[in-house]
Image 1: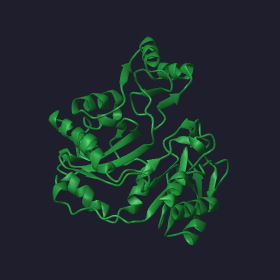
Image 2: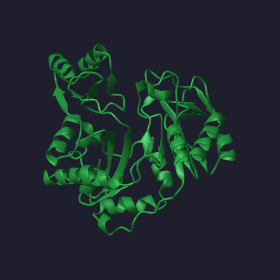
Image 3: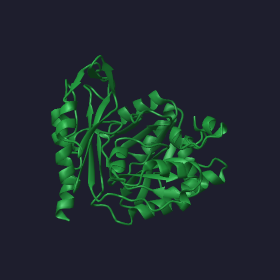
Length: 343
């Protein structure tokens, strides 16, 4: 779409089809990172069950198997069960099998015009469906920002070792990346490692990052689309914390049930705004009613002076919403809020 819009002479925020392969193909992303010298997990690209079995044996448990293409956040299996790993590899065609990365995960968005890289604030999301990081991988069950436990130099380090080299490498290849570059990172015992790239704002981290951004977003996106990021004033940020909790439908991330009524939205608007609000994801209208229409149905985002206050506000709003059979994690940002209090 961005290619067609640019061809029509209209500035567009978003990468070209070629550059967007950074998200669309795990194998392509690995190749770019190798060319750019970006630290990431060791990996094998496998196209047959025999190749996959050999790679799994080489790395050992925990096994990490990624569908090479887009899979709505559910194409990754991390398991100690070799048979589960082999089954996922066999069902996906071409896969990327990686070494397991220890340490906490961090998400960092950056806006780029293909030359200049402008980082946003880091966030952490929660991929597993259940409390305590149990259950299957999902597209994300919640997020928070800031990260009180992270090194203050983390953003600068990621820009220098990951984001800028990646943007420079894509430009060198003749496919400059202009738009939103997301890096999913593991802070391992051996330093920062890239887990994956996305070529877009991804939820639920976007909700908490943009909740803290005071600079109007439109001007930032226009500067990226027209090559003017280097001339942009520094971004202004709120000191507030933000927490997002995802309310998912029954049986997510399997085959989610849809068509269930969603109520309590007016109560949130009346009693929790402006500090907490609801963003719709998998909903639709049926007459005057709102019903579920997907796996992740709603995101409840709240801000506060610190993570503890933002959490309290988010979960107070979540408690007002009723959706039969729904599920949500109760531990979003809990550990970080404790770390913040200790600090």
